Length: 434
Image (cartoon, rainbow, N blue to C red; front, top):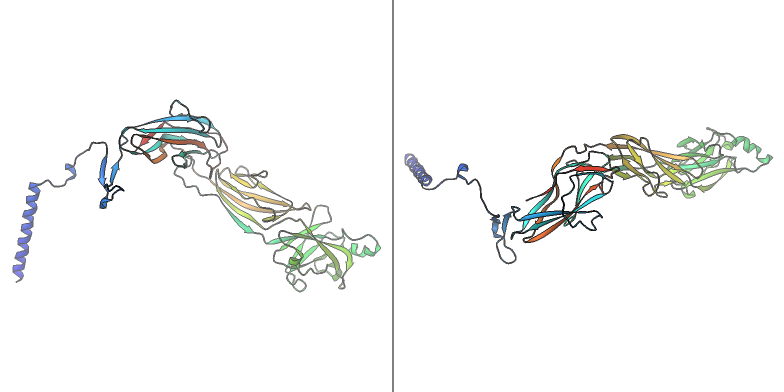
């Protein structure tokens, strides 16, 4: 039985070999070397799989566009695309002195005289933008689509500028030791006790039994006012004229600072009036004062050359104070505006790091400061010629019709890179591609 099965398999294999030999002799087989080297014609078409049809029931086809019967003309605008020249001319091949934010506008008319619609792309040939950290050559399209591309940073990924916000951990208090004490012999002892120049503020949440913070106060110039910052969570305090005070060398305890109105956005001024409590503590009153204090601020900034970012703080929300200013520790790395509508806006100049300083001034004249580390990242400005710089792609030009492309070359990137110097560029014309 096994021998008969083997013989049967052998006969079947021989028969199939004979059939394959006959087919190879009688009909041509597929070979790369036998294929035609070219095809000619206005367009090629291929039926879409599954027999998709249009609204009229006609089978749709896929077309390969050849750009046949296309011509184009370009017109220049000298008034920001309000009007264009009547005589066509190619874009200038060399441009210098393009001011920051300015554009050179063009209108390119593409005409199709054939009976088949065409899909095309419009390119700039051998486009070479300015190599500079302070200029950005961009190409944009207003019609028939909206598009914008920065070619000074072509093929580079430039991250957006970022900033990190942090909360402040202190609030500011003020002290006036003897400024409101009446004159006369009855108050001489008080003046002797409190007439020094060293004062402390002791704070906490149960300060008479547990002083959690003991801060020596700072005198404001030659005035009679002193200030200090205490932890934002502390709700009790007293002032003292000695580090380990006797009863008469300290004020009474203020037990509800939050209820008294003390916060990061509202400072309090405490003052003695020369009288004493039953516990022989010097009696002190209080009033609101426009102090200097941060609620939150930005402690770090990451930005790339040419970018801008606002680190401005809002009065009454981010800080308390009469005024605020911003300064750069190194204007060769970054600058920061300190006036006008752009106040608090950083502009990155060169790669490196430098310190941003916030300075708040109070109604008493002293200041509070915070700093931020600003890191400016560099990038390789484009130094090569872009052989084919796209203006617009996948553009349909109808059969026996015309399509207009309104486009421009601009010095400056509206989203990321504000140019600060005149720019230049060269090109070798524009061309169509299918």
